[in-house]
Amino acid sequence: MSSALLKFTPYQWLVVAILATLQFTIILDFMVLSPLGAQLLAELSITTAQFGLVVSAYAFSAGISGILAAGFADRFDRKTLLLFFYAGFIIGTLLCGLAPTYSLLLMARIVTGIFGGVIGSIAFAIITDLFPLEMRGRVMGFVQMAFAVSQVMGLPVGLYFANLFDWHAPFLLIVGISIPMFFLILLRLKPVTAHLALQKDQSAFSHLLATVSKPRYLQGFLGTILLSTGGFMLMPFGSTFSINNLGVTFDQLPMIYLITGICSMIAGPLIGRLSDAIGSIKIFTIGSILTIIIVVIYCNFGVTPLWIIILMSVLMFVGITSRMISSTALVSGVPAPADRGAFMGVNASISQISGGIASSIAGMIVYQAADGHLVNYPLLGYVVAGTMVVAIGLMYNIHRMVKGNAN
Image 1 (cartoon, rainbow, N blue to C red):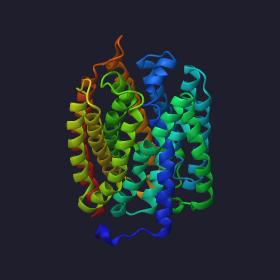
Image 2: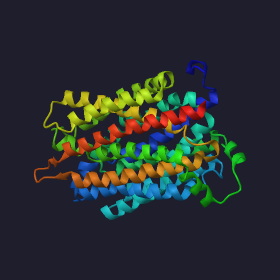
Image 3: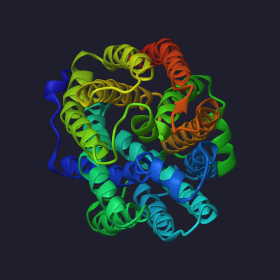
Image 4: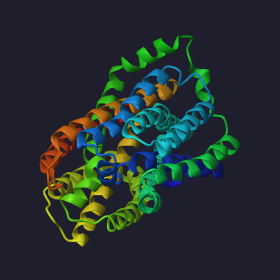
């Protein structure tokens, strides 16, 4: 069936808007750490390895929580689960906004990860339940647009308040946005319970074990590991590299995120439509090749004119956005309806855990010299590019598997 024949209903548009805004708060909570990196290194007197641990602490706790919750994910109304974990996420983010020391910030990130890391998997399970495969490229395009919106609106505002007050302010801002979202979900999102009729009479542990032991699911999990590795390796030290290696000032940093985010926000829905029209695997391959080229060039830059940095950042994020939208649409077609919650939960956990490991490895590869420069950043870029090359082949296999199951 042609994707042009599939139209969103008014309620489906509402669901897309709710989930996109929800993703905005979750992604902003994670992404805001990267531009705050330079401030945290100075104000808390911590090393790059310690900062990498702050990032990975969220990822590890989210991964463990997701695995523990995965066995129960298909046994409850997805709306109820979403509200429960979102409430915990809000509390964890509030603790980050109140943390006075490095140790307490680390603990607060663990709490946030326990709840926040599960939300994405619930949201994607809802998408898979409510939207057919032929529409998911566009849905993912809008939902993943939250990634760009967090740059356009959230990161510049967050950085502005961080510079105006201190690094706690962006977390408190996220709490202020998340509380109204909680009540919007409570009042407007309908229960999502169709999957409950498909459940077999088995324990949560048995359901989890059955999910992680299916060979076709293992390919999806492996693809997620490779996809997460690249993103988590580069993101934590992006702002520090820009300031100390590329010659960007603190005042210029919000402008880079703003321009890059606007371009990514425009590209997201267009990429989603292309993904549905010409195929997710084609978009993933094109986006991967573009990203590999830009990453290798960008990570070898020294002090660089601002316009070149902005241009390269835009191209990099367009490539990353292409990979995110198309791969999410592909992987969503892997699980059977009865296993969607568990699969998405385990998949999210694997993403967080592998990302946490990657972030920690990045903190060991890269180190800060006495003059502030990050050393070995080009090596980090080559490692990331290598994972992207392998991911292309693996995602092609997943594409063939999903296509075969649909026929």
